[in-house]
Length: 624
Ligand code: GLU
Image 1: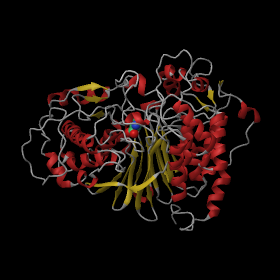
Image 2: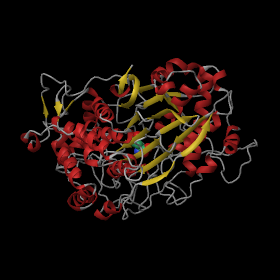
Image 3: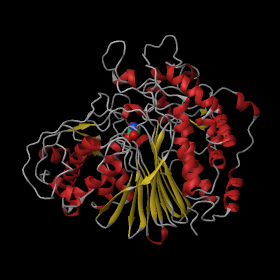
Image 4: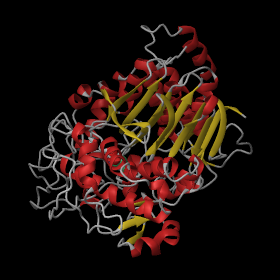
């Protein structure tokens, strides 16, 4: 029997939840570590209870998990082994990522949760995106002192002005209530333990801290937590976050209202509206608008997935407020018109890049929060619309970018000449975020992407609570335009690119995958699907393959290995390839994906990155 059903109505045995919970009870807390300030201490001689080994591939049965982090994967695996289902394990792993990947995810952020329910055979989604505070004005990104727009960096990214009402905790609570067997308290237990006993600092954590040194130094509480002796924690030291452990404990005892109401809600509002900056910071740190009322009124949205079919597969992605599902889906619909498997790799990649540019043009024109603007999801995913968009794809030559958006109000699938010019959609999204994939023994699958937006979010730690607030509102268009579907509006969700995706074949899960990476999330998911379904790669090869991303911009951004392998051939087709990398990080990488493939006889292949972002961690319950 599937455990993925409402606890009460579907009669999932309470004993199962209790047994799982018993197996997860956190070890008693040494009194001193609760009061001790977060600090990096030398690693103990044994780290056996601190998982550090990263295996990017695991094959077996009985359940599987893949995340970027060995602690999070271990927490999820423990839940699966104790009899918890995929939803229980996903929440336990996500809460652990809030501890070990605090710069990418946590209760100060938001995300999108996609579930395949083996019992109903349906895919469902939760939209736990951050929302704009009700008092956020349309000119929020204009500096009142000068009347001119704030700079994106540093003004907006490190600010209260970009902090949206967080949705992550409400998402965990709703996912468990809908489909889990564990209480929120029990699902938080493994993460609470990791926060208290600490995790081993790796190079990625240290580097991400250093990348944020100036921002964290601007806030007393962030500096105290993440730069404890004036430096980022050393590689190999143990990083503890007892204040986050206490916050998780408080939520475990009192439920989500401990976060969305009362003292903590007031405190979050206070620091957003009056950021606690250090005296000598030179960062401007504009104030924001978050109120206790915004927190009290936050609601997760349950909604239908965005679905498209692709060469005999049903691809389920995230509907708006994310642009992920429609943009991946539209590009697949365009690509389906060509036999990519009969092409050379370079020709197939040319088609991938061009289809992606066309879909991004439509994303820019049509995508926003559907509670505020009319998003033509059906039309964007209509095969006839794709047929007409494919008319602009020249198999022998890259189009001049940006390409123009299509017209969803008038199309018949027939090619007609167009001289329309495109506009570039300003891309301010970053490369942060984290993603996880879980499958359980009953056949349930979860794909979950969560974020606090930029690596390090707004830079602001909530005093005494050990977590960072997001800067997700920077995903709104920076310049206000009344015709723009992604313009600032109070209570609205900014457009996302997160693309947690579950693929069914013959009605059964075949593949689940997702990635961080701002707007490159879309192309990473698309490229992995093409690699796996069209180009004959295994899922291990599909995740490891070098990446490139074309988001309707003049240049194609690509990893060095991609340029080395395909640069000359793609340049001959008219593409201009430039190496990946941004102003915030030195990494010339795109994405940090996770995936699980479900093979014949329920054989699970869980994969994480073999090298990007310091490697990921894949695990199975029963390796064979
Ligand atoms: N804000 C981005 C989005 O919603 C995610 C952040 C990132 O991946 O860098 O798509």
